[in-house]
Structures are given as structure tokens and as C-alpha cells.
Length: 198
Image (tube, rainbow, N blue to C red; front, side, top):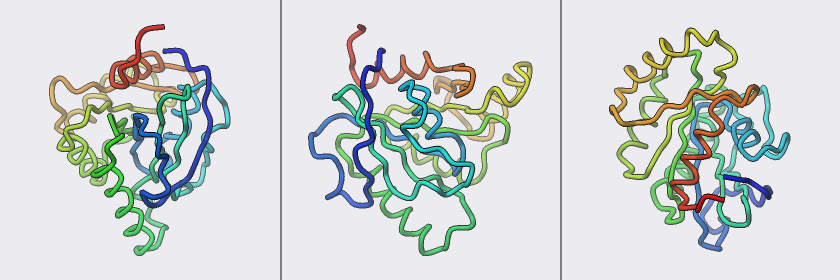
């Protein structure tokens, strides 16, 4: 998959603000500060398109990125960030759930997890939701460059067991620094968006 064009188009908190062209969308879900924006930037090969921050809880809206004038990446607010007020967390949960449950253009979900840490309760809840959604999904374990390559297998196994992952569910080790896993993610995107090989 060759990405020739990518642009940020809109931030939304309700369906009336979503893009209306009817093009396919891929959602990115994961805890705060897990590397969703870094993954987008690496996949599209544009350094600062999706804004990254060392401060968790920075993404507070659904951010739509239009790719190749054909489909959208949708970056969702990270979950599990304790410093956000309860009412703010509830309002995020509502518009995230509305989007994930009702958006017809949504054709796949990439769930992101930090390879260095075992999944949290929030990760388990999200993974169960993703599994039950019936949508194609890919699990991506980011920050693989932050641990020795020899630990990848052990940490992957912990993630798979904690989440009780299906045997055929894919888990990609990914690094936005080294590019590890980029081709696997692109290949999954190509299959689920129905894009012909260039």
C-alpha cells in the first residue's frame, strides 16, 4: 500500500460533524499515551500530521485523517486517563460508543497496546467490545523498540493470555521509531479497505 496523500480534516464529538462522503473508516483505539498518533504518522510517513504529546489525555475528540482521497483514519480519545474529570470521561465514553456502535462507514478497528506492560482492565474491556463488534480488527503492540527484541515473544504471550485472544487473532509488534511492523499494518489495511495492490 502506497500512501501518496494524507490530511487532517476534522475533529468531531457528534455524528453531524463527521465527514459525509460515505468513505470507509478505520478507527484507532487504545489507552492514553499508547502511541496512536505516532502509529498514524509512521504509517502515512508524515512526521507531524497527527499531533503527538507526552501528556496523556491530549486527544479529546474523534480526529479524522483523510488518506489518498479514499478513506479515513479516525483517532479516538485514549481511555484510562485518571486525571480527566468523571463527567469528561463519561462524555468521551458516550461519543466513542456512539461512533463505534453506529458508524456505518467503520470497516475495521486497530487496537493499540503498549508491549512493555500487561493489559489493564480497561484494555480487557475494550478488547472484549472490539471482539464482539463483529468488525475486522488488528491488535498492535507499540513501543517495541523500548524493550530488547528477545523479550518480544514473552511480552506478546502475556498480552495474548491476559486478553484471552483467539488463536487466529493477529498481534503485530510495532515501533514508530524503527518501522518494525509497518508493512504488516499496511497489509491489514489494504485487505480490510479492499484496496487493489499498486
